[in-house]
Image (cartoon, rainbow, N blue to C red; front, top):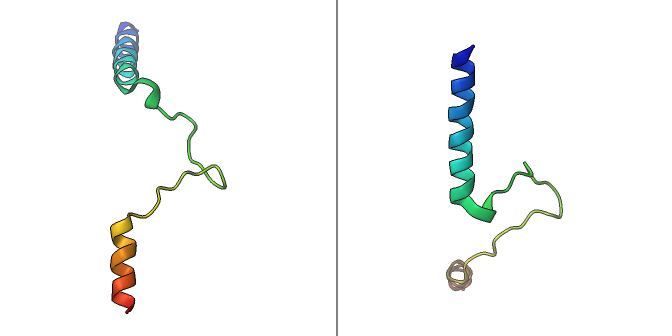
Length: 55
């Protein structure tokens, strides 16, 4: 029984350490689907090379 308690304390300490290191950047909402998904725009270099290749 004491091993379970020690394991829980160790796990909780590791979890708190990770959360403290990440700060406010932790996203606990799970998978995102639909309009609320943020996609990064394509780099301008990729768009420029695609336009020059089409000519």
